[in-house]
Every structure is written in C-alpha cells, then in structure tokens.
Image 1 (cartoon, rainbow, N blue to C red):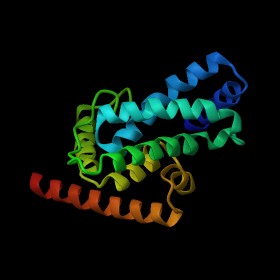
Image 2 (image 1 turned 180 degrees about the vertical axis):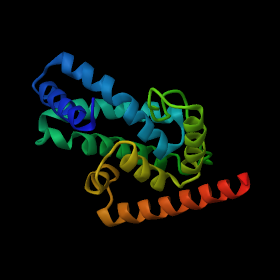
Image 3 (image 1 turned 30 degrees about the horizontal axis):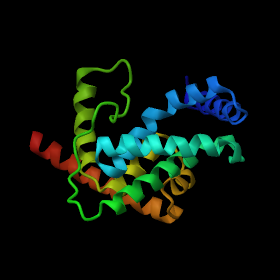
Image 4 (image 1 turned 135 degrees about the horizontal axis):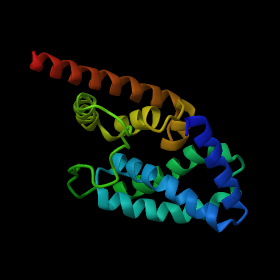
Length: 188
C-alpha cells in the first residue's frame, strides 16, 4: 500500500471506529500500536514506560474518537495524546536519573522487505546517528521522515509551534550530517 492509500484506510478506520464498529477499533489499534510505541520510546527512551504510556493513551484515544472532527487529523492527534502522556510521565520521574536504553522489541522502525546487506549496514549507521540526538530532535525527525507527517502535523503531535519543529529538524539534520561525515572520515 502506498502512503496515500494507507492514510485513506486509516481515515476509514477512524470514521468506522467512531461510529462504534468494533472490528475497526481492533484494526486501528493493530495498525497504530507499533507507531505509537516507537514514538513513545523516542520521547521517553524507556521501552517499558513507553508501553505503559501508549496503553494509557489508547484509552484516551478510543474514548475521544467520537469528538475528532476530521479523521485525517488522527495521526497528529494520536501522537499528541501519546506525547502528553509521555511528558507527564517524564515530569513525574524528573528526580530519577535518566539513561536512555536501547530500543526494545517493536521500537525500531520497520525496514523495507527487500534490502541488501550494504543497505542494512548503512541504515544501522544512520540509526545510530539518529539515536545520538536529543529526544525532541529525534521525535521531530522520526515523525517527519518515518511517519511522513508535515511540519504542521508534527507541531500538533509534539504540542509545540511549527517554528520549533523547523528548528528541531534543522538541528537534528545538522547533527546527523556531522556524525555521518565523521563516520565516513573514520572509514577512510
């Protein structure tokens, strides 16, 4: 399925779920659970907390579907609910030392089905560079490039102004580029 048809299918599922269609609820959760988990992990850096926050977010998402005016707004709206849950969790645990952990199962983005060993190696280097970013930059970059959201949708999802999204993307790109250029210099 291409991105446009996936978005249309998600809109259909949101609309059907909002009317009480149980199968649409199930399918919507199946399709969005991995994406929301990855987002929560990028924000929190903790796989177990990410799972807890997404589970809590689903309760809010499913209760609020009937109030969502535009089914096309679902991605940004759902990411925003998860972001806010994660921010609350982060503020509650502000006194605990924070050490981001390696991505847990289901936290890595899905890879294309057919890729070469060279592609996989290059992707691993890029993902390592992305992993070195600050959480707000990593979240903005992933929502833009992996989840294919617009700057306006990312602003809604992260609950920040569009200018802040642009700034985070700019700094993230610069840092990833610098890290990747350092890697290529070391390989020579």
